[in-house]
Length: 342
Ligand code: SAH
Image (cartoon, rainbow, N blue to C red; front, side):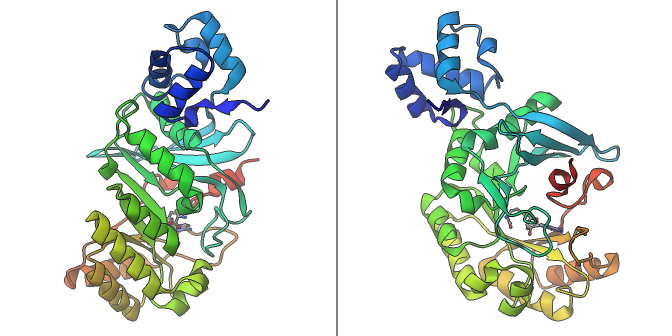
């Protein structure tokens, strides 16, 4: 019999499981606290449970615990990049960043990705599989255990397309914000998508109060198609409608992510198009100089171009931040750590 992934069970599901094996309800609360508050990696750590219950759990459940197989630490800004092995040997990455306002972790949502963005390393080998809610949570738990510091912000911007794994993503968010777990604020969670229109609408319906970041990268359909195959499926007009719906339903402003690629999307007309779209949605813009990936032909816009581009947006009244390039000394672009690990 295949074992049940216990870290992905909600408090209610865990209660049902305990009842099923003839245990009292409060055992579920104890187990949940061990996994999601005390961040136990193994049933043997759960010392207020009887040995027989711990053994019973070991037989019936699988307790996922990600192993850091490599941790790279920046000497300049304290950023740490983790490469984790999942229980089946697949690898994912997470990044820990220290900001003045708290610690932030960037997590992966899938092993690989099938979206095919042409500047991105994560998609080069296609999609291997989805991550479970427990595996998404455990990236945060492992990083917390490793650093000994509380995580206050979570961004789902690592490997994978989170809205291509929507069900597990929703469960992950619910468990992360549950008062029986880490009880993180929904406002401190950001989910980034390449722009899956029906899923954005579905997420809006959930009214979760999380921040939605849209990877825009191009302001005309033609340019966006050049960079992102998903743009063949959904037009910018449809995307803007879906983002407008998200804003309307949740009251949360959308963030546009815009990777600046030299000579590709960094001209005056691109800035003007971006201003138009951002103003319509009251969106915040996050500019990212493209991280060159060796299998890809894109290079970053020059420093001066990036500065001028940002200035233009700001002068037009659009709130635009430049993603701080953290951990440059340990970085490859997103997804490169996994790819380069042999
Ligand atoms: N699939 C989701 C989240 C993962 S990617 C999405 O597309 O939004 C997180 C962000 O990094 C996205 O905005 C993505 O477009 C961007 N990105 C990927 N590769 C990059 C690269 N080489 N340089 C700069 N940004 C990159």
